[in-house]
Length: 295
Ligand SMILES: [Zn+2]
Ligand SMILES: [Zn+2]
Image (cartoon, rainbow, N blue to C red; front, side, top):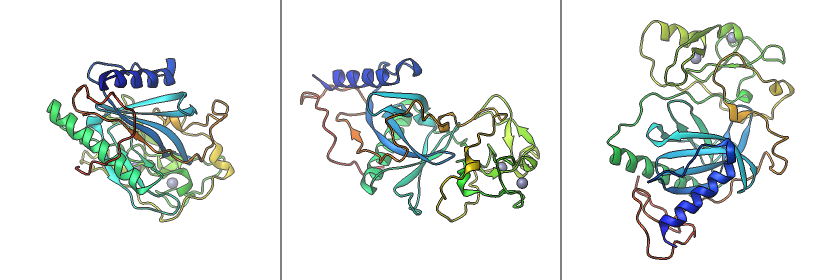
C-alpha cells in the first residue's frame, strides 16, 4: 500500500473515532502528519486530549476511549497558529502555547524530546502551508486563559476573594481572572466571536479608547497550581458568549479515561507532508525515528 492509501485509511479512521460529533476530515490534498495525546491546561486543571496534526489544520478532542472514540472536536486552521515555548514550572513540564485568533492555550508533552518533535512538526507544517498558499499568518491572537486555580482573588481589584457565590470570570481580551464587579462590560472582539464578549474594566477602557492593544500576557503568580477546591466546581461565565466548551466535565462519558493520564508517545507518519507523493517502501506506519530540526 502506498502513502496515499495509508494516509486515507488513517484519516478515515480518525473520522470514525469522532463519529457524527466531528466534521468530515478526508478532503483532497490533506495529509495526517502525526497524532498523539498531549496534556492541555484547561480552565480547571490539566487534562489529556487527543491531538491530530494535518498539513492544513490542527484538530483536538476529548478522549472517550483511547484510540477508538473521541468527542468535542476542535479544529484550528494552521495559518492561524503561532507556537510559543514555555519554561518548565513545577509539575508543568515540556510545554508550549498554541496561540490562534479564536482560542489560545498551553499543552504539555511527556518528555523534552516529544515536545521538540511536536513543535518542529507543527512549525514545519505552518511554514509549508504559508509557502504553498502565499497567505500570511494571522496577527490577531486570543489571550491564553489564566487557570482558575492560579487566582484566588480578582486580578483586577486584588480584593474580591472568589467563593461559590462570588464567582470567577475570564476577560476575553487579556485572559485574566476577574470578579463580576471588575468585568461588567462586554466588547466586540471580531476574531473571537460575532457577539460582544466579557472583558475586564482595564481592557474595556483601552479598547473603547480606540488605542491598539498589543497581544498581552496577564500577570501570572509564580506558583504551582493548587488542587481544585470545592468552589472550583461551580461553572460560571454562562452569560458570556463563547466558552471553553471542551473544558466541561464529561466524567459520565469518560468512564475509562483517568484525568491524569500520561501523554502517550506521538506518532509521526512517513512521507512528505507538503505534497501528496506516493512512497516506495510499502506505506509503513512506523513512527519516524528522526526528528526534523529545521524550523
Ligand atoms: Zn475585582
Ligand atoms: Zn482584561
